[in-house]
Length: 220
Ligand code: SAM
Ligand code: CA
Image (cartoon, rainbow, N blue to C red; front, top):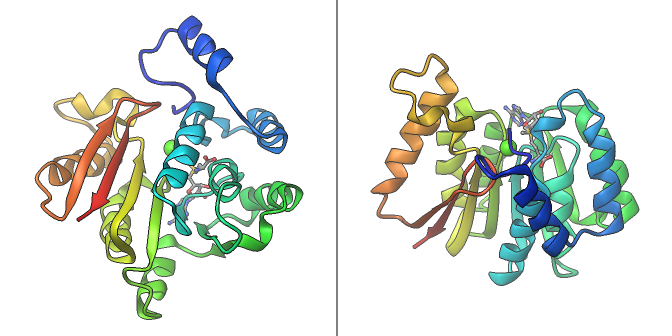
């Protein structure tokens, strides 16, 4: 679903990649290995990973959060550009998927900067808040189970410092957000969240038609 921007013709997508994609060799190998995975569609598009990398550097992020790791491509994109004292708290429930991630993070020399927590992300975010981490994160990327997106957003917002940014993936749900009567709960949840954010006074907001739609929310 997120392999390239919805509606972007294949030839233009190939052109975009041919003139702008900058990937480290480890990222390319991880992307190629994941392409053979039965759930390969879960990985973010390469131009989206590059965008996240750009953003993380732009805001000078040091403490970052990822909700939904899979085989570790988006986490690697971010971790590689963190400062030496930077860190990424990475949340997933799958040992199987993240075993691949750990292998590539080690190869890229960023494993020591990634704190992988295998547990429901909601629990990990709650324990971070209980440990007094509110207001200490610079960046969060939300890309796990869509039914829990509202909780991920609320808890991430608490964890962020003012000026920190949350990136939310798949806000178009493959185009289904415009369906007048979606039969999929995840579409309804994401649509409700999109509408909530439109008037949320706690943030600055932009929604990008990148990949399957990416919302950026900057905490005021
Ligand atoms: N960002 C990843 C990338 O670029 O490759 C893709 C993430 S994939 C779309 C979603 C991930 O969320 C899966 O690896 C899945 O195991 C994880 N997940 C699903 N439910 C979860 C939960 N309740 N808590 C934490 N992770 C969860
Ligand atoms: Ca996604």
